[in-house]
Image (cartoon, rainbow, N blue to C red; front, side):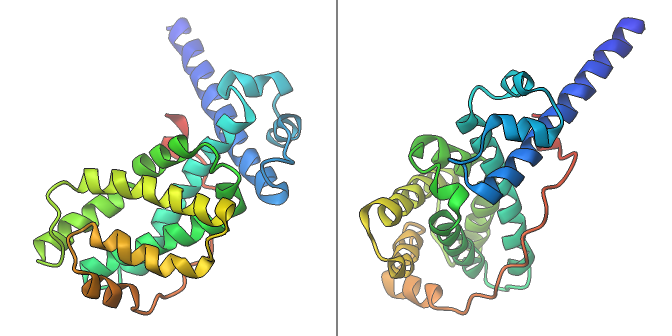
Length: 222
């Protein structure tokens, strides 16, 4: 029993440390950007020893990716808060695609990690995927989309979003091209281009303010 209690205390401490590092990492990276943030500063903000960081994350980039995954989850939740008011499941999906594109090209924490395109695309697929894949299924059931494999379409879309964001941040594509990107990505669901353009042109309510990092999220412990 004593051994089990000791193991339980160790596990709880590890969970607390990892959560504290994620929260501190997000705070520091939001304030200074990923490039200017240091592991020492993040460790101090988390109130752990500098060497402790490397027990949980191999590098600053790995910590930044974990932070970004949490930000992706909260973005999905904010999108959900808005789209819960929509009656057309195709509009739900279109709104989400636009918000992800705008965030990927506008949030400095995303932009500074785009060089790790495969890692970011995989994180986008895994952490936000349950929402758009559900929306594609609902839109298909409603006769709006024609998607037989939502996971495949979202996998392709995740990589397309990251590639497009790189095009804007690295290659000089104008931000105005986001609308065209939304249309083309909607066409992947089986929509004709005119229908996709009409859907992309619908009004987009603003997202609710970004909340502070949540404490004690189960996903933080995985």
